[in-house]
View 1 (cartoon, rainbow, N blue to C red):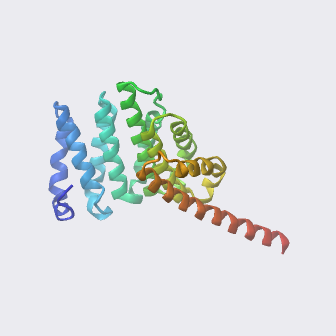
View 2 (cartoon, rainbow, N blue to C red):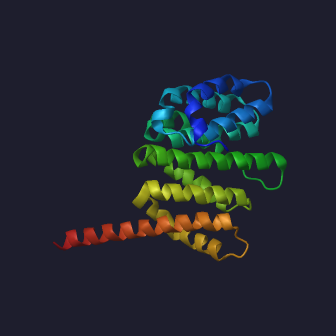
View 3 (cartoon, helix red, strand yellow):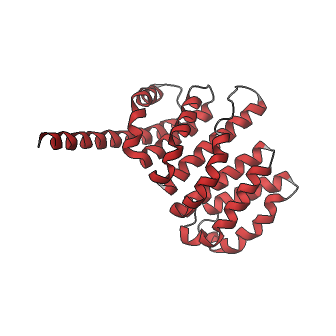
Length: 239
């Protein structure tokens, strides 16, 4: 984390060395290994991760599907997000295999103020975050089948009292607004008033304000796009 970018040139040797540690009997070793993978991968370019991509995805998916610990599942999802960021469109082939697992995670029940549920909420939020990164990486056509259930889950998070889920939702919305473009338009009438209330709220944290501002900027872009499309269509009808 603190040796970027010089340490990245050793990624071809370091990443394979981490694979067996993902299944170490020590929980701390597993969590730390996921963290190291995340830190490496989110800063790599597609050409640098290409040779390791298949092995990385397989190992992380295996860890996510076999571990019963929420903390390890959360870290494996975060690492998968970083892999998607690095791989960009080359991640598209893995999306149909990973998305069904994440769809189950974003449906975890939200119940406030219990330690177990807090872990569930965190995992649910990480899965939403991963969907956002995969959308950016894979593009609109690949991500479209998952748009509706992901948006529904994020909206449910906004209706809860868990501020972390709110934060995950704002970041997701910003990413999906960028990817889905005009298809994001139908959700704006309900979403924009909520975002404006957040910006006006005195108890909103600075980080919230930054993410909401980014989202509002992208929403303005979408509105302008929709307006341009409407004007073009009206001109077409009149000619």
